[in-house]
Image (cartoon, rainbow, N blue to C red; front, side, top):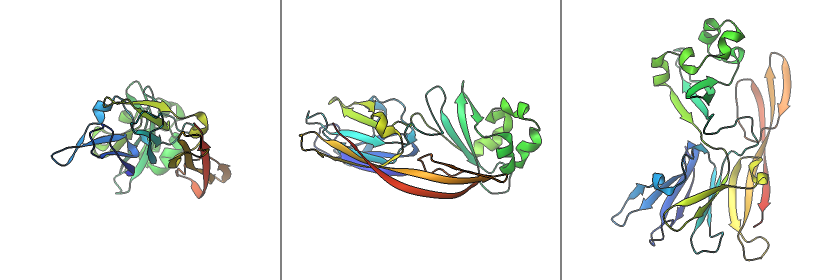
Length: 253
């Protein structure tokens, strides 16, 4: 799902191009063609894989070179879920029990295979076939998705993966490519859902005002209740209440 889009002449040809971001999506770059229409040139931007949980984009000339740069707000690095090229965070969604209801399995990758993050008890409550197939923690602990579900089930399911959760500054190199640098740690403690680029302190440099969301959750499972503060607004099985509180931060250049 696209969550943010900005018009930006990223190649300097005088025509406004389009950059989009979204959940479970890469940052995507679309060149405005002279003959009309837009062409996906993401692969030529020099950024590598950027699939993430993106929420916001902002444009500005942050290094005074006359070229527009980008800032992209992602899930952040202070989260229960992590992702990397070696261990990608993913999601599978499908009717794994045949009851026409969508089941969701969050996974982490290892050596090219996906492994469920939840325990056999948690998943077994939602997908009864798992509890039947794996009667012990030991049996389930090493089971990959292709060992838990049949190939036909996985083929029908939706499957998405992520490459990075870091919010990024993307500097326009002026040659049709961008260089990505993670924002400071202060900007990684929560998902960035809004960005304003403006000179806050009047020093002639663009600063960033970022809006984030912190979350308090009351989770009930087997008679036990505890509160967490993930900062993401995620929901999962057993969540009984969720409250979001906006937070605003300033990043000075």
